[in-house]
Length: 193
Image (cartoon, rainbow, N blue to C red):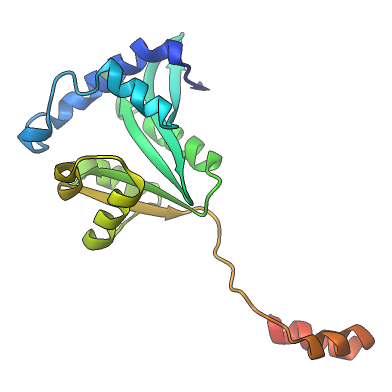
C-alpha cells in the first residue's frame, strides 16, 4: 500500500535509504560515499525544502520510498529506494507511477549517478529519456541543490507528463466571418485541424 510519509516516519525512511544505498558503495565516486548515506539532518533538510515522501508499506513496515518535489516549473523525483531484500518485486515501479500521477507540471526530471546503470535502466523502462550531458548539468544546477562534484558525476532523465499542444491563432477577421455563417465555420475548423 502506498501512503504519504510523515516526519514521524523519519527513522523508517532512514532505515530504507541507508540499507538500499549500500549498492552505491564502490560504484559512485569514493569522495561522494559516506555512512550513513543519509543522516537525520539531511532528511530534515530535504523535507523542509519541499520533498514529499511516499512509501510502500506491508504489514505496517516500510519497504520502499520515493520523494517528489515541485521546483519552479518542473517536478523532481527524489530519493528512490527499496530495501535490498525487497527489490525486484515491482515496489519501485508502483511508487514511480504513483508519483508520476501526482505531478502537476508538464515534465518530470530525475537525477541519478552516471555509474548507477541499473537506476538509469529502471527509469528508462518507465518512460524516462536520458538528457544530453550538457543539458543535464544545466538542469542539475537549476533544480537541485547539490555539490558541483555530484553534478559532474550525475545524469538527468526526463519524461513529459502532459501532451504539448501546438499553439495556433485565428485572425479576428476569419473569426468574425465564421460567426456569421456555417460554411465559414467548417472551413475555419478544417484549417485548424
